[in-house]
Image (cartoon, rainbow, N blue to C red):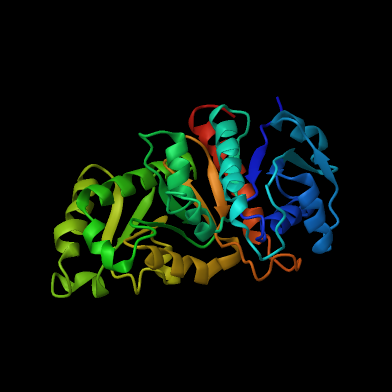
Length: 335
């Protein structure tokens, strides 16, 4: 039986999503995927960016396999207005959102193996009353009320999870609590087993304050929140260590001692992974019933239309989505 294809969403049509998807198809190392987009628009952008890619319109995901070798399959999806590279149009926001909904519906019904999302321009969507901070929260809402999504960033060098994500730094201490930390760690531990085939994960938890609080002399969050959670989970059988000072937990030797770093806030997690391996870092939403990955960068409006956008993160995101899907099947006794 043929493997199910991967659905790619267009993201912001004025951004680099079109170009990096075209380049991913040209790379020829990716598993079969199709793009939900306007074929005419994609062809125009390919010409503008000097990317010669044959295009094939399909009517359903099942048709992907038969044409993927020779052309990029596109499932038709119209945008209300034409937009120039680098110039987002607010009128296109509903169509950007609708493409994500279509891809998720395919994943939920098993017509595709995974969803890979191109970057969105959040400020444009917000003006159209998009009520979610980003993809992660929107995907969770589409998947059901009981879903608890967690952002995981993956590269060959490092796996990281931020406990608090798109929050102002001033809010982190207000949001961080034992319940949130414990749920995040447990979801990450489970995902390492099912999605990354790590049977006995080693988790390292950062502190929040400088020097991990120095036993309460530089903040109390480690003593009152982080340490109790770690001890409780350690007693339940998890291989977990911390809290560790964030300024030393990402050295080469330190990284060899764990499989994933659990960090307290966004930049604490993303700065090290992007510094180590920016172009191969991938955003993975764990805790969902579907597989979703995304390039770990933005829309890069300044590069759109130039043909110069680096597609490595997109290529890695597609390959990782395929791998996670296979790992999940294997964890269930299939494949």
